Picture 1 (spheres, rainbow, N blue to C red):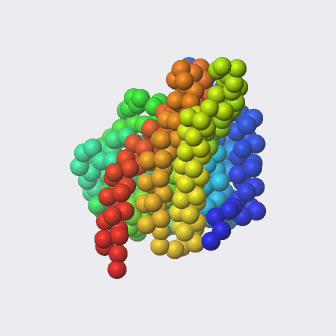
Picture 2 (picture 1 turned 180 degrees about the horizontal axis):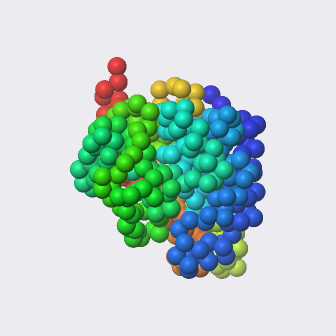
Picture 3 (picture 1 turned 60 degrees about the vertical axis):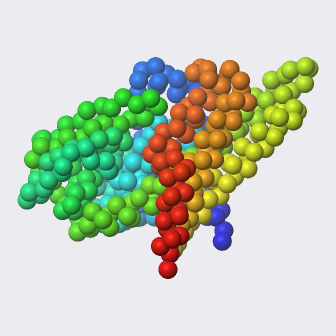
Length: 353
């Protein structure tokens, strides 16, 4: 098994890094934070113009037609640069389900606009009230919808199927949710909203299909965050001196950094394996569960170690490391902690035929 990117996927990775290096600077992110902006729309449009947003959308809908592994090439960079963009939401929970389950008319209407950066999409997954459907009119609410405030369309799974909601529709309201990490989330409330159903897929099939891809995508983002955190710690310990020596030469420091490197590689390799199996159409539930455990347990361990190796600088909000600490915490909250991942993996193994 070769988890390396193909030539096209590597090109997407290199192009994304080039754009991020130019636009996602520490100073730029700090200015966004001060202005309380959770979404860098200019960056998103730049990615769309260069074809990165539409990388996994079929060519007939103005995309590049890459596999799910191609998404990993982008998401690892999102984690590495702590980029405030809805890549997970719009590409993984928006474009990909529309492409998989939508009607031909829905694909033709929505996918080109997503690829061009015109539409931001997301999926509502956490119900906070009973959701009812009467003749394609949906009522109810969902809480903690990622990038709900910025989204133009939302996919809403219900017992009657999955429905496409436009944020501009009559009866749709969004209430911002304050989060400790600054991640954009909102409460969606629908009051007799006229909608259209996403193809004929059931809620159960939609959720099962999407959950694997969301979990795999989160692991890819965590791999990028680990790489960046370890890189900052490595550079800092080379220049920070005590007793006329770089602290990187101290045994306790080098061992802690070595452990973090092993964890980082484990997160990256298990996330790549999970994404590769999904792309190849192979059974992937076990591999995704393994990747989730490494991302949840080792991922936060890496950013925690990097923070410790920086000393007081590690918690300085004028220094970039704090973004990866917050990102790792947010991703862990989205996946669940390591104990939950072990329980899920154990259940998979117990029920394995």
